[in-house]
Amino acid sequence: MPEVSEENKSEGNGQERMKQGNGGVEPTFTGETKQVVIPVGIPILTRSKTGQEELDLSDIVSGSMIMLWMDENETPYRVQVMGAR
Image (cartoon, rainbow, N blue to C red):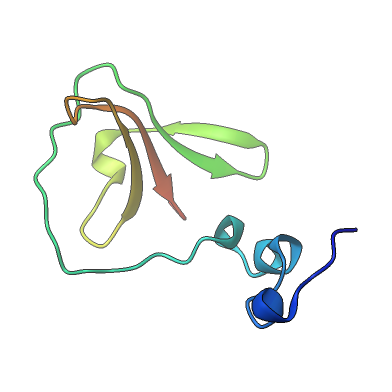
C-alpha cells in the first residue's frame, strides 16, 4: 500500500475518496449555463443495477444531472443521466 504523506492525509487517499460516492468526484456548480444540442442517434444512458440502460430524450427533465462527453468541436458523443428514474 502506498505511503500517505502528512500533506495529503487530510484529503484522504483515492480509496477513501472512492467510498464517498460519485467515484471520488465532487461536482462544482458554477451557475454557468450552456446550450447543447444532442445529435440524433447519440445514446442517452443511465446506470442501473443490471448495468447500463438506454433512456429517451424525454427522460431528461429540469433538474436532471447529466454528464456529457464532447469532441473537439464541443459536439456530444455520449450522454449519461445521473440518478435517472
